[in-house]
Length: 554
Ligand code: NAD
Image (cartoon, rainbow, N blue to C red; front, side):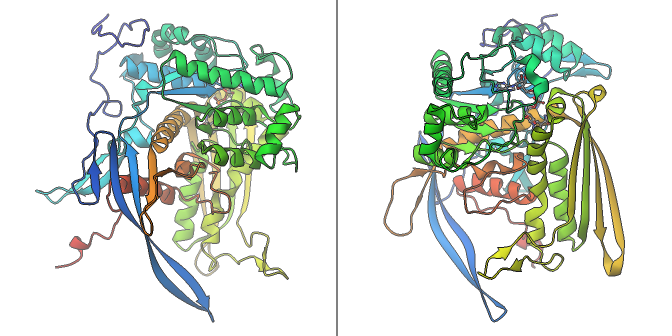
């Protein structure tokens, strides 16, 4: 039933149902990003340049009174207009996320439709903030109504269909069979996409240090870079990145960890606490250098961005220092797909409503390979840590409800201060497969001694929630490599790249990595606001204002 045999241009077999329906709006190609006509914004063939006033305030407290001084700093942002030809190399490409991502991109690329018991289903990018959500850019000049555009239209971005896919896995199973093993996608889609997946073939051999992931993963590990020499492993991965780039004529590769959750690495002075120590530790094959850290170092040394989609502390201090030294981008940690995303909204809602959560109890059970790996204590610990700090900033922002930490003898706060009790339990229940169940109870203090309990049952199709996040992270990361800035107050300076730790990715991440010494923002609303404001600043638009003054005055 070949209805439209236009070649996809990707050297993959034609699909029998290719092109039967119009492309879903979230996957459609719109040729133009928005154009801003303003003295703040200029366009050349190569760049969009926009001036921006960063407005803030400095606060001092004097005798219990807050004295606020508004501040303003002038900047210019310069964005290279042409998106890079981008490759996405996933570590763990043969897993549930990796195969689901490859298969869904292929399905979108070919606009394959498939049958489910509900009827005909078409591919789309629902769940992607960039492709499936919109941003308000102003009001219609005729009707006065709000105008919203897809987030991906604010600045030129890579279309997910154009990502060139590849990566590593310790399991040699080819991607068509690995997709079958994952049991995520409908059979009819698997059937159609399988020949395309087979073209991608077997993952590249990877690094396996059994001490870092659960022992129950050992049976999968049959596709390994030989030997125990970590320096040789590093060189091998660097060569893989270079070859993939060259073979596919790419400008940019995003290296993405979506492999099993590792245990935490110990931070050992002289081993991984500085860039030089870390490089030396790799040379001497120190046992505390994890596979994910090696991959991050390889990407940094190749000048390609690295994103960590799992919770472990890949970014030991030496990695962050190395990224700074090479001005190479890094982002992480841990995809924020289901329970934590909801928690970052609900906890903020409660605290901002003046209600005091006393406890948050979270249970999960899941039956996919991720769940199997997390059933081991040390790997669970990584996940527990990543899930646990999500309410911290909201609690810290409200010292009316929660007591501040005591101040120690040297004037330094001791501990975190009062916090809700917060527990996270994860259990492996094979029967439910990729359909994770998350049960949360929020128990709060309300008016004059009252109590409120909210219970939530959240059934997540884990990989179908995670895959659009991987796409958003990849596309945003590529965009952020094209943005430069300069301060325009004072002497004119050169445009320079952003700081290497991409905290603008926080919306998609459970435990956002931020510039050392700066605060983590977990509030989902604030994370989204930051992203929208940044994209708008790059085209010279004011950040979000819900003041809507025109609706409030005569
Ligand atoms: P998965 O177990 O299906 O896939 C992981 C893959 O990584 C496997 O194919 C495994 O063979 C491979 N692997 C393990 N160690 C490797 C190494 N050193 N090099 C190369 N490959 C290696 O898991 P998944 O469901 O795809 O999840 C992937 C990761 O993303 C996990 O760490 C998980 O905790 C994290 N995560 C997933 C979600 C979600 O909703 N799916 C959310 C947040 C975080």
